[in-house]
Image 1 (cartoon, helix red, strand yellow):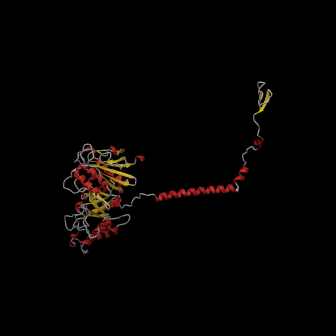
Image 2 (tube, helix red, strand yellow):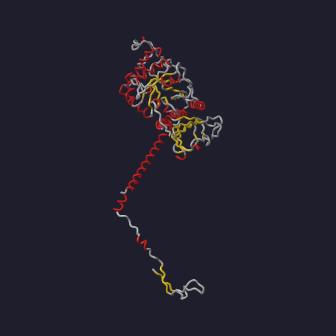
Length: 486
């Protein structure tokens, strides 16, 4: 390719003394010079035969095998590191609980559902209906009171009070209960067990004394499927010798799938001292010790007295697995709050007949206590933190400002149930005035949460702890979560 340049005749000439010589008026200048060497080495793709020859070479095979080996070695290293992290990371293992630690107990008198005048068929139908009702509430064990005629001495422990029904009816009750998954226990509190006269009882004539007669009676009921017995710490049976004898008998009928237990009702602030250590009694001879949340009284307690009793119970250290019941007279307006308390504390709740349907003054709220009990029972079974989580009592500053409260008003109560990273906050306002929580009352707690249930069953959805205003006589359960995980 050439470029022809035509211009002035003087183009290309220089003045005198210049460096250029004269050129023709018509000139050809080559702009691109062909590269003969580049044309000789043009790139061409390899053919199939050439590729197969290169891929099958020894160098390529060695490189490929080393690459595959490095991949699997790296994969195994990452897998081992992941397994090591999982094994060494702390885990919250759910404890293996006994049935008496998992179930809700229900204490009642047989006259409430047994009718001696009814025939066997109608009685069985009535019992089945009652058992289904208790099962729907989440009840796992029933404690029968007043089964024996304790006012007449001596007491025949192999026969029930005839005014309550016949023995076949009662044995049928035990059979139906076990079919429905509800265990039956017998309450022997306040019975003069050691005043039995063998001469007045034909079954006891062959027995050498009251102790062997009692052993015979207990064995009789254990053979019929009774899951355990309850006594009081004021009974003569509450002694190291008797507890050891009874424990041996109960263990004879116990198995891994059908464990029988002995329960003691504590009437005072502490169990009476025995000749053996109390740890030995609580650990092996007595599986369950029932304590009263509210002290017994002959008149309904005031809200401040109930609050003081609750706070004293919450701050009391529990070395062994506790079981709770309500012993004192609680005002009707506080009964639902106490129900929330007994169902959210660590341990076994023991509910008396009628506690699940507490009386209310407002007819519009007539069914709320029953729904509240079902909600609490389901939450306790579903949530590990409410079942066996760690318990932390939260102190309020009694001098902090609150709306509608004076300095002498009943302060709120609160505690935390925690299991792993799950936390449940339980709040109580036992006063008859509303209470607004101070935003800084618990700075270490997460700010956000969601309502689980409340005594009024009228709270749901998310909530901020800085904006809670509690109603009078209200209890609230809140499931907390971190703000970045919401």
